[in-house]
Image 1 (cartoon, rainbow, N blue to C red):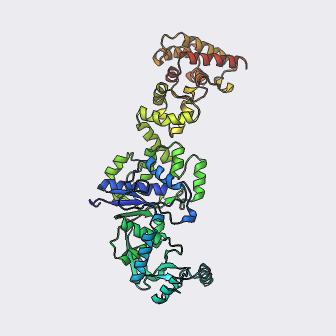
Image 2 (image 1 turned 180 degrees about the vertical axis):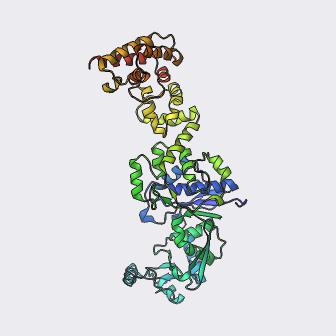
Image 3 (image 1 turned 90 degrees about the vertical axis):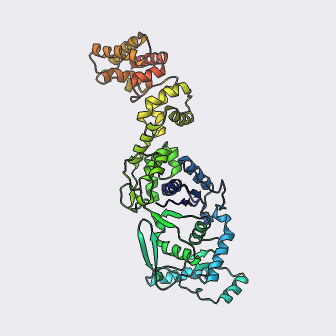
Length: 493
């Protein structure tokens, strides 16, 4: 780990929901920057205008902030190295493309899309890998300038050396050697004047002083090209880190859009916005995704501050990481239980109110300690605690019948329970539980039969937090009224 302050960036395209892969890259970028006292930057790579989806740029910014990954420079907050949207940097790319042409490292290409498609089809007929055939590579610069001045449409392509090899160094994988003849003359500047990733990202990383480029392994294929572009400008290379790929939950094959569709049906997602809406916590999501590609024990529970303290790029791994949603459940539950009562109450209150419950803070602060241990996601607060905020409950009549008894017998048990509870001096677990246990003994029944019946009567459901603690929160009057109602239901069956 270099002790020099690192400048890192996450550079998503606003073409869809922010994916877990982007979020993990942002997390590692953030950890490295904070660990070294550097800066973490958000850059929006929006040059693929046709695929840009309105609203997704804001979703990216909201998602990073929800995760707690506050960036130091970005499109909405500015900074010394802006603009931070690539469509606002068009002149910068055009100037750099011209620099490469002037150096002889790039050339104007006047080939039409129709001609390039014809060449591609011919190459496929001969079982060749599609590649640019070099038609415009050696056009005389004066002729090219004349054609450009005449308004002829053109792109700018990088002029890859045909001989020798390129050795590109990845921090996780070591040296990667590629024969130059296998690397295409890629387009750097499109005919509309906007750059491709190959030019824009290299220019921006240099102009913004990026010291470490962390990105997905899908860029390994064009890694030698990018290294050659940087070297053609004569710039120092950043430290390149191509992160591990995400695999399907089965561990077989790369995660696909179809897997994402399947996940949402099961209450999971690979998109940050969905995870937020599904009731996962930022702490749980961060902990879960941090360990997919970071060589630390898989069960380590860490806060963001603890991650910063421990982070080291030498501990990152290139090994593929299978998505394990059960691990997400585990970490989310752990981090929920680490929240204070006040903080957990603040997070579940909007969920209750959006579901139509009228929530009073005093009651909520009593409910949270009762449901905390049962929550896997914040949304679980509804099934485990919604009944606390209802004026009345209407249980399924069949659920009121105690196991091994009929409706009449269950009504008799409920009446006896009502009488016992009505007589307790204080409405506390310490006062109500002992006489109820004595009733169980007296009736010769099991606790599950008696307590289960009362539970359904007062909560409306078969599963709830501890019964007597729940009854204390609901209150004597409501509990006795609900048991009375249950007796009437049973007697009418």
